[in-house]
Image (cartoon, rainbow, N blue to C red; front, side):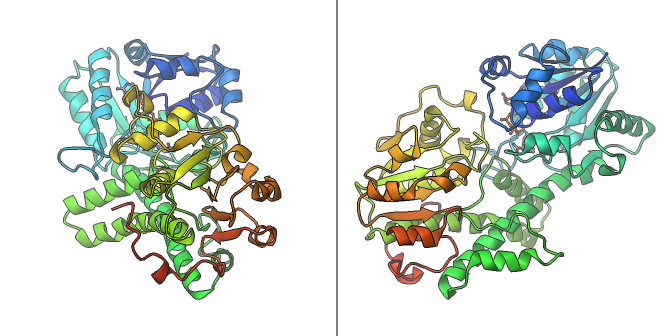
Length: 488
Ligand SMILES: NC(=O)c1ccc[n+]([C@@H]2O[C@H](COP(=O)([O-])OP(=O)(O)OC[C@H]3O[C@@H](n4cnc5c(N)ncnc54)[C@H](O)[C@@H]3O)[C@@H](O)[C@H]2O)c1
C-alpha cells in the first residue's frame, strides 16, 4: 500500500486527507499534528471542526485507510508523499510584523522531515505560502539530506470552509506546480495520479512552482477584492438611495462579471483573505512595487471601513450611545456552516460595541462559549494561531454573555446585530422577538438575509447594508460625528 502523510490536522489538512482516503482506498493516509487535543478530537465522535459532510467521510475511512496520530516522526518517515498543511499566519512581531507570513510552523515541519527521513520523498506544499517558499524548504532539506532525494511540489488548496467536502469532491481545478526537470515531472505525475482517481484530467493544471504559489495568493486577493468592491458600492447605495442587491443583480447578469461573491455584508473574514493579501502586499513591497502593494492594501482598508461603518451605524442610530444597552449578536462564525471564527468580522464589531460599553448577548449555532471568550480577549495578531497555542485561561470579557438560542439573546434587548448568515436566522419568529424587546427595537442586518419590509411592518427600525435607509437613520455624514473608528 502506498503511504502518504499529512502534517497539520486543521481546516485544510483534516478534510483534504480524509477525501484522499475516501477516493483512494489503496492508499494509507496518516494525518499527524503536534496538538494532542486536536488529534484526540479527530479520533472521537466530536470532530475538532464543523464542516457539512465531513463526519460521514471520516467515519467511512477512519480505522481502514485513514488514521490520525501525534506520532509525527513515525508517519513522516514511513510516507512516500508528505503533504504540509500547517498554519502560516501573519507574523506578529519582528521583521515584516503585521504583513509577512510567519513560517515558523512551516520551517519546524521541514526540519523535522529532514531529521526523520530515511527514503526519497515528495513534499507537497498545501499551505498558502509566499512565492518561492518551495526554494526555502528545498534548502533546508538539501542541507540535511543524507543522500535522500526530495521533490517539492506546490499544490495549493482552494477549498472554502462551509463547503469544503463538496469543493474537494468536485473541485473547479487542481493546481500542481513542480520543477521542469525529469524528477520534477515524475513527482508531478505521482500527485496527478492520486487526484485522477476522482478529478477529471482536464481539471488538473500543472505549472512551474512559482506560478502555483502565486496563483493561490492571487486567487484569494481577487475573491476578497470582489467583496470589498460590492461593499464599497453599498456605502454609495446608502448615500444615494440605490439598493445594493439590485446593483448586484445587474452586475451578476453580465457574463463577464458573474454572480458569485457579490453579496454586500459587514465585511469578509476567515483565516485566509486578510493574511494572504497582507502577504502579497509584503512581497510587492519587497520587490519595489509600491503602487501594486497599495492597490491590494486598499482591499483590506475597505473591509476595515465596512466594519467601522457598521459599528458607527449601530451606535449613532441608538441615540449616539449603546452604553449599558443590551445588544443581541446573532452569529459569530465568519460565515455560515463553519465553526471557524478566525478573523470573523464579529470580533471587530463586538469589540467596537464593547468599546462604547454595550452589554452583549451572543448566540451562534456552532461556536463554543470558550471560543468566543478567547476571540474577544485575544490580540488581533494572534487570532490566526491555532486555538491550542493560545493562552490556556483567557480573561473573561465582562459585559458579554453567550447564550443557547436566538430568543434568549434577544429578550429585553435594545438592538439586534446579525453578523453571520446562518439559515436559522431567516426563519425566527420576529414578531415574538419584537414583543420581548425594549422599544424602539432596532435590527442591524450585517448579512442582508432578512425581509426588511416585513420587519418594518412589525415595528422594527431596520438597517440593512446598502439598502435605502429607514427614516430614523440619519444621513451618514451627520450621524457619525464623534464616533471613533474601532479598527485603526
Ligand atoms: N482554512 C482555509 O479555508 C484554507 C483554505 C486554503 C488554504 N489554507 C491554508 O492552509 C494552511 C493551513 O490552514 P488551516 O486553516 O488548516 O490551519 P489550522 O490552524 O486549522 O491547522 C494547522 C495545523 O497544523 C498544526 N501544526 C503546526 N505546526 C506543526 C508541525 N510542525 N507538525 C505538525 N503539526 C503542526 C497545528 O497544530 C494545526 O492543528 C494555511 O497556510 C492556510 O493559509 C487554508
